[in-house]
Each structure stands twice: as C-alpha cells, then as structure tokens.
Length: 187
Length: 225
Length: 206
Image (spheres, each protein chain N blue to C red):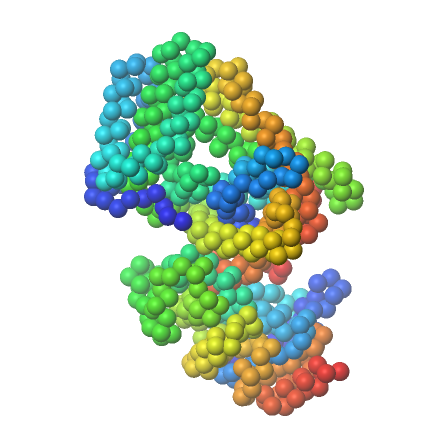
C-alpha cells in the first residue's frame, strides 16, 4: 500500500471519527437531524472506492477495539463489540466495500450530474443499507436470539433515515468527485 | 557534502517541469529561489529521492538517488506546511517514531530524542500535542524529528512561508546555526541573502548560479519582467 | 481524545494483553454454548466482580456501560414480546457478561499494548503482501493526530457560513471539510516518505 493510500485512508477514518463527535446536521427539507457517523461510512465508499474506503473503516474499528471512544456517543473499547448491534458495526466494513465497489463501476466522468448522483445513490443504498442490514440483522438474530423475522422487523424502523443518508452521501460524493477526484476508475 | 546532478531533469509526459541540469553542490549553504512553478521544488526533491529524474541522474555523497532507501538517511527534508509534518499526536512520539523505524533500541531512542530536544532548546514542546502548537513551534518540532536521525544534509522547502515575523526570525536563526549542510528554498530573500551560492530557477530552467547578491539581482530582474 | 484505559494495579492490570484477549474469546465461546440460566447468572456476577474491582470509581464504571447496556436491554425487551421469557433472559445475561469482561479488558490494557498485539497478529499478513504490520500503529497515530485539526476545520467552515448568512447543510459543510482534509494527504505522505519511516515502500515519482 502506498504511503498516499495509507494517509488518505487514515484521514478519512479521522473524518468518520470527527463525525461521531460533531453534532448532527439538519437537512433542509427534513426537520430531522442526520447523525453523521454511519453517513461517514457510506461516504468512505463513494469518495474513495472499495480499497481505501474499506481500509478507512477498518482503521475506525481498530480504534474502537484498542479502547478509544470514537463511536458516536463516546462509545468505544471491546465492550462496544458485545452489543447486539455489533453486526451493524462489522457490517460497516462490507458496506464501505460494496458502496466503493459499485461507485467505481457505476459512475463515470462522462455522465451527467444527475446520472452520477443516481449511481452514487444506488451504490450507497446497496452497500449502506442492503449489505449493512444483512450483517446487522443476521447478528441480531443469532446473538440476541431474536430470530431472523423479528430481527428484520425491529430494524425496519431505521431504514427511512438511512435512505436519507444514502441520498446525502450521493450528493456529497458527487460534489467531492468534482472538486477533488479520488475515486479509482474501473469499468 | 557532494551532490552531483548529471543531466538530471524531470518531465511528466510532454510537460518539462525541470530541464536537465548539470552541476555539483558542495557548499555549506545553498539557496534556491524562483517564482512559483519555476521547478525549484522539483530540483530539491530530486536530491533526497522524493522525485526521481526522468533523464540523467543525481548522485548524493556517492550514491545514486535511484536507490531510494540509501538516500534518506543522509538527507533530511523540511516541508512548507508546518502541520503536515508532525504525524503523531505528541511531539516526543513523533520524534521517536522516525528512530523506531530505523531500528534503534528503546534506550537509544530516548537518548537521541533528549539530545535533539536539548540541541534546539525544544524540551518544552516534547509532551505537547501537535494540534496546540503554533506554526513556528511545529517547524521547530519538525526540525527535531528530521534531525534526530542524524542526516548531514538538510533541505528546507520554504520553511518560513507560512510563519509570522517572529517565527520567521526564529527559524532563520536556527537555520543559520545548523552545523549540517543546508539547502534552502525560499521566497523570503532575506533568508538566503548571505549564502555563498544561490541557484535561480525560472520556468523549469536554471537561469543563474552565483553568490547571493548576484543571484538575487538576476531574480529580481526576471520577476519584474 | 482520552483513551478508555485506567491506571491501576489490579490482577487484570498485571495480566498480559494476550492472556486477556484469549480469555475474552474463550468466555465468548463458553457463554454462547450454554443456555443454563444459573450458569449465565453466575457468569454475570463473576464478570461484574472483575469489572468493578479494577479501580474505576463506580459512577464512571457505570457511565461507560450505559449506552451499550441500554441496547442490550432494549433488544431483550423486544425479544420478550415475541419469545418465551427465558430466551430473552439468556440473551440478556450472555451479552451482559460479555460486555462486562470486555470492558474490564479495555480498561486494564493500554493502547500501546493493544497495538503491539495487533501488529504481531498482522505480521503473517505482511508475508502475504497484504499490508505492513507497522502501518497499524502509524494509521492509529495519524487519526488521533488529525481529528482535532478536522474538528477545527469544521468550526472554521461553520463560521464562514455564519459570516455569509448561509445555513449549515451537509453538502455545504461536508464537501469542503472532506476536500480540504484529503488535499493534505499528499503533503503528509511526502513528509512520511522523506523521513524514511515506511522503509520498505517503493517511492513513486508522483
């Protein structure tokens, strides 16, 4: 891994950590504030692509594991992995990977702004919701003995919020690509 | 010190960033001046191997820069931006980190860290967090980190660019007193005003190579065109 | 950023990081193999005793666990609505015992010790060419180093918004925050390479 890749990933990990510390930001048309840390995970994928995006999220998990309170709310340490929602935490890695993988392949520089944004939105939805929730729900079902159906039911309430986040991630991802492209291009 | 440029130049595709240069640097103090984009930073980065020549070669103290690992022990590099050089949260750890990666044992590391802090009267910065330091203090910390590993050539790329007057004077005094060989790129002409040799770059070419007074005169000529 | 390590001289403090991590893993396996309410209740008691004996004042000890325990509780209550009661209690006890021991390990192991363990674990991966083991410590250091800078940058962007009478929105704030932060990467990487810190890396020209 080149030094530049390492630094880019570490800096984005730092952004994800900062997002856990900063107060939630309100989206104009919806009065509900967006808690930004999981948004950060989606953005890791749309900004950096699969490889660096995944490494950034892995670095965040290492920080949690070694005892730094970097998760929103000041959570951290190995105890954070004892929660029944740990599947969502571990799922972050795969979410960033899939979001990044799809971003690299769906979004091209020749496309119009709208098409690019839709591409990023799809990538963020599939990675940040479908894949993430798969891990979260399965772990919830097993570790908390909830059973798949109930775990699924319980998690549904959070999906609308995450759809909004996917939308924000798409807008941000596209704007960053225009201002400072870092997304590897793969066909 | 013995730095030889043998027809060394840098191009990116068709764009010539630095036209081939042939010269030898042995002076204790060498200044490099020129407008932005003149190729002066590229020239300096060829010396420590951060940038490799597209043509020709650069030999530093007998070693070709193409062999990257060997160079870095001889040549230290101080960058413009104070905050991007301290990479660990606490100054002391940052200084130690460079030594650790060179394979020094913990006891040796502690000795060397203390020694370099003493040398620059920077002991008061040792346990401070980088985030809380001023630009000048950061450059001071960076000097400690880079010189802790004992390079005998130090390149400084516009070291006072982002500093206020007080810190500029501080860094100027520090550079003056360095026993190491120093190659200084600077927009601040005062910094290099009494150097025995100053190189002037313009649009990728070396246009003057003379003692400071003459070189600065030539530079002002070019800049006012 | 304050770490969750707490100074002290308890038995847990004196154990090696590796021993504690192995014990945690073993505990996890054992907890999930058993569905015996009594055993699990005893496990909670034992791990609680360990956790509260490491030297943390009771208030902060409880405060640390609050968010995590709350999640465990909420999920257990949810489970209660659909499952036989002892299934929910088993889950509650298992996760609580795990949480307590994990928190005890975190509080009695320094960051440096953790990084040493991870670096050791990563060495075999080094041979596979996947990563450099020492990069773990460097990555952690870089994050802790630059988080305050990013927070400062956020404040600066917010102030600029206020000065121009613009409302703070994700796109207007996050975009410059990300771009300005990532733009520094090249300079930071150059400084790292110039110090020869990642010695076995091939230096590129650009």
